Length: 297
Image (cartoon, rainbow, N blue to C red; front, side, top):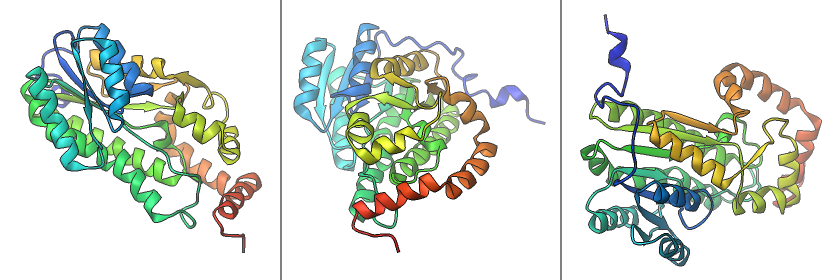
């Protein structure tokens, strides 16, 4: 019979505490939002930080503001060659790579699966899911050599039905599974991985999607308390940073999503049925389809 201790991925490492001082951390989507705030926190804690972003100018401004232990790297996470080069640049600059945070992500325009442009679906999956693989894959040998840590940023959206924005939920559910698999696999070779989940975070992406769009506001209004509680990008970043510090298998913020995360197997059966029958949801779905040129039949 297997000893339960054999299931502990940290038994090869010897400690759940992880000090980032003197380590090198690479963060994607680091030109703004959560990625930028995380770079600030980890730099302040003594790490060298590679800020990777498709917007080279934003990454450079951020890196220069941090100081000598920060560098900017331009990369499109949806492009595998681009991320391969980004990892190589970070290692060449700092001589090592200990921690990778795959944070870059986008949201689609509101649309149903029937009415969305297939290129929108491909773009979201390419950045949010394939982009995580593209970021993590070329970094793993370096992380393993350093007995380091990987964080993949999923979302509480992975728990919920995705009407009107399914590609985002689909991608984040995939990221969750990637992170869980990685956690088990890295345990065999002395490194760790964790998944970060967030509810609604005050970022430019959130404002564009939920606040400045009429349909987005309607979708946001459907979230009950406490699921509609918002946190700042800095609060989300601190959650990731503290999770790295304890090699956390998962982090969730705000805390109101924790019961949903734990009980979603049962909750989602009821929730999906309720939403499918809800007249308000049905009206909103029809409105989304009408906006995308598909009047209700």
